[in-house]
Image (cartoon, rainbow, N blue to C red; front, side, top):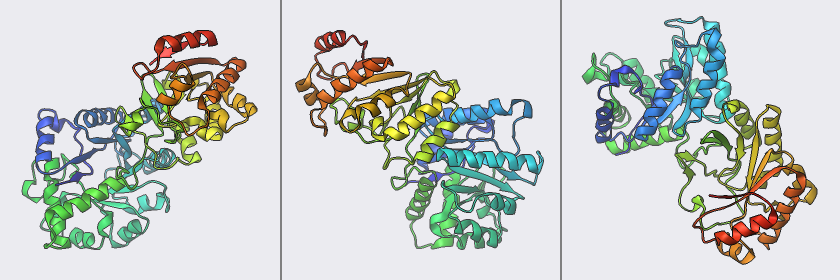
Length: 453
């Protein structure tokens, strides 16, 4: 059975002594996926660690009761953005408004809520929203049409507010209180929500379902909430069918479903930040990772279609680039296939004082003028060119291409690159079938440094 606990705080100390057992128990109960939200920088980092260790998912944000101090807020905001670059971190959350406790003034909560909304839209991450005693205000400040999925966690709005939320396409998270004997109002509300908008969540270690009230909540208890939803929907439905529907809803809400899977536009590798502009490439190299995987280091990089220009630019702008050695344009495809966006992105980064590097197959001379190629090269501090062979015949065998005479275009690109004065190198993949000694000799004749990968 597939089940998804879409909101579970495994980062809290309640799970320090038996975290592995709790996760094992949840999987035995059919809970195949768990999303761990956070409340501040520390819990965001712990959540990301847990997600990566146990192959789960996490989110990063400031909870409205855990906002940073004025004196450190920008440093901490940068830290949240850094956590969002972790490979299993897939959402901004939980953020929102809490007028029940009012630990912080409403205007301060609203300021941070707006910052989180803008960050989610800028990066394409789903947005997890907390609302307690502030459902009307949350709906008022959430734009009616957002470009990212919105999850209203542990929703407590009335029927009119719920109708408004659903009409905007928001997802409604339902927790243990659905099972409480005196909570008929919530059960009636849930029955009116379209089935494809409902998510099941435990909010562990809080809000345990009816059989466990007064005890620590756990993700394995997701099944009790699912059983209550089945009862409300139709007892003739199998528990597996209901669980699968709720699982699919969560997969779509967090953009993990094949129908709306979000590919990472930026990702970390070593001490550099990489930009993934496209999954298209003219070559089908024998050694390419694209033949066997959809990404690297747990990052999902296979774009179903090229990401929109404004999303790429806003994602790069939101990234904490100064925390990295350089910004490298090398994704799951050939970046020069989006040459205009590539140049615009590189110039924006350079204007912020960031070192930039282009990794390319050097075949853009097949569709760009020499002048345009030179203009592109001059946008970068460094250029790494995939040589991958010692001659045309070897290149065609190792890197079959849709480009006619690709080796000639590659040599032309190298000549143009040398003429610009840009810092360039060529590279070859070891054990790819290339004659490494001959490649070394070619690089020496070209008077270009060679990197063997």
